[in-house]
Image (cartoon, rainbow, N blue to C red; front, side, top):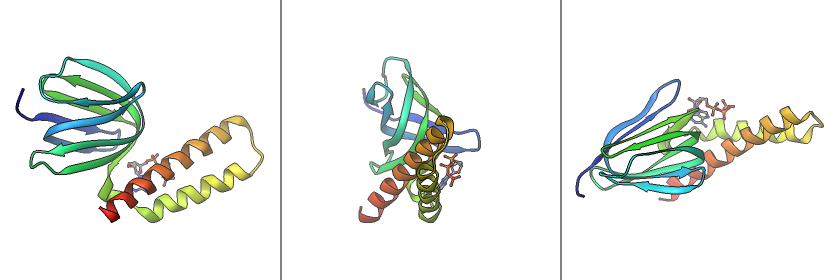
Length: 138
Ligand code: ATP
């Protein structure tokens, strides 16, 4: 079916995207999935990763997403994420500092909860850096 689908990406702090797009590809917990207009409704959890979409003009766009939920309806995809930002909004210095902090924490002997937290922070920072850097060479 031809036509655009509405994409909404929302976090507790902000609306990251609210626009009509051609296609959305997102990192579902069970694997990456793509949604076009007219898709059968479904609901899924998301892994940390990158949401890609083609905007109405056909340009590829990228968003870092820190897990969450996606609801696909025939004319709308809603993504609720703990945190998310557009590739161009990723602050490289901030991600580098977060990476360094997390690495220092992982080097300390600590309990499992702190270790898991530091590991998750490290993964967020690494994903952000990879995504931001992919935009520099693009
Ligand atoms: P930090 O330790 O730097 O806060 P974090 O991974 O703990 O990083 P999150 O909890 O994922 O941060 O996000 C908190 C808020 O800050 C969100 O609104 C997120 O979009 C934003 N944010 C976090 N890191 C960056 C970054 N490097 N560039 C741009 N925005 C960021």
